[in-house]
Amino acid sequence: MNQEIEKVECLIIGSGPAGFTAAIYAARADMKPVMYEGLQPGGQLTITTDVENYPGYPDGIEGPMMMDHFKKQAVRLGADIRFGIVTSVDFSQRPFTCVVDEKKTIVAESIIIATGASAKWLGIPSEQKLNGSGVSACAVCDGFFYRGQDVAIVGAGDTACEEASYLAKLCNKVHMIVRRDTFRASKAMQHRVENTPNIEIHFNSETDEILGDTVVEGARLKSTLDGSLKTISVTGFFVAIGHTPNTSIFKPWIHMDEQGYIMTKPGSSYTNIEGVFACGDAQDKIYRQAVTAAGSGCMAALDAERWLSSQHSA
Ligand code: NDP
Image (cartoon, rainbow, N blue to C red; front, side, top):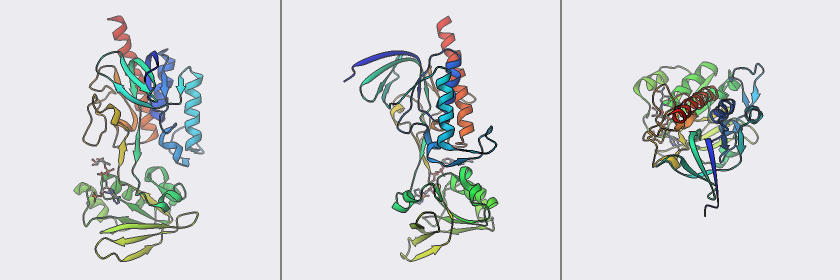
């Protein structure tokens, strides 16, 4: 039952680098942004450890602390950041209607979608136990910590191939674990992996278990052909089996690709619905970095501000 209705000028949905940057810009533009943080306040960076590739932190910073900085900056500038999950939206007419936690209704003149994406995981207990202690879903974020060491990566798509190539430059050896007898990745990416001497590809292999008590020490692979087991010795274990954009509630209204990534008009954050803007990983399956998400959050706030001004002066 909807009990409360509140009108806002700019509603930001999601609280990763994209959402907070949008909040900072929108607050400074006097759009009085209201943000609902969503299921994972702070976004994917709150489940990583050290972030060393975000400019401005010469000594690196822990992901959760960085997101706390983003939040404090947005709050100081006047953004209204709230704990809550937008559970449904109606973009059929303006202003748009969004329901929070299935009870509160927000009526918004403009919307910035910054709901991000979630990495897919294998779903085995050892993966969860060692997450952040050698298990990672982002080679670009965490590969650096395994310089000169042996690592493994699971997956056979473009991301896995790209990340395996990235890791091969840093690490001594990369074991690539592929569940079928073939790749899903484009031919060019496959060839790159196949022609990299320190990548060993284990086809027809599943991860039976990631080994180690407190940190990753190895992995046990199981053949999909005959069930035989073999152990590899690694200190880092990367999972690159795809991401799921957190966009399902927008599906009836917003144009998306077949995987659910929001399609924005090139060079902008405009979606197919006027007044609804998208930024961050919800619309980016290629770069997926905190800094690119932050940049696109800035774009969304600037686009929303210009669009709102054009509406008010019309
Ligand atoms: P994909 O969905 O393309 O590939 C996922 C891979 O993970 C598949 O090989 C799949 O195996 C494997 N996989 C899924 N579940 C499991 C599991 N439980 N155990 C083992 N393996 C598993 O995801 P990507 O992230 O690679 O790519 C997403 C999209 O982004 C694609 O369209 C891709 O082309 C694009 N992309 C483009 C890039 C570029 O152009 N530079 C870079 C990165 C991504 P199987 O093949 O057996 O199903």
